[in-house]
Amino acid sequence: MKVRMTPLTVALSLFAATAYAADPNLGTWRLNESKSKIPAGTGKNTKVVYEQTGESFEATIDGVDNEGKPTHTEWTGKIDGKDYLIVGDRESDTRALKKVDNHHYTFVSKKDGKVTDSGKVVFSKDYKTRTIEVSWKDKDGRPVSGTLVFEKQ
Image 1 (cartoon, rainbow, N blue to C red):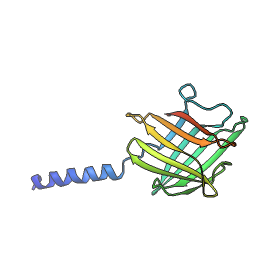
Image 2: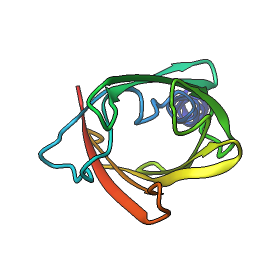
Image 3: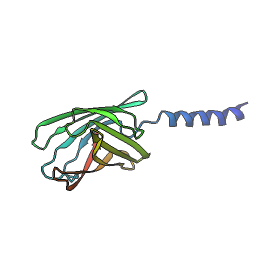
Image 4: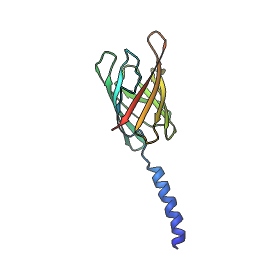
């Protein structure tokens, strides 16, 4: 009987570990400005907190705008590539995140259905660093890009 139970126990344990594995986004992330490449005259997110509630994720994002004034935005949604409401962001009203694999995600932000920025998130092998490559167009329609490096707290 023990011979039959062992493979079943292992299979159930692996299933449970996979089903309940924490998403690498979860936790508190702080911007490392010295490792980031932030275009002059743009705002920046300095702290991002991801929490999971059921099947959804809640992101609380704090930073400063291009004039140095504090910003606070909140996003709740699934990481399934669909648009979910973002509150408090002047530049966008929805954001969609999609998991590519355990170390890569993509995102698209929109305002009134029009893309405002997009990019990818890359996690280090140890999941302690989260690098975001983002691109958008400035007010004159010229392409702008930046790289934000966040470290897990």
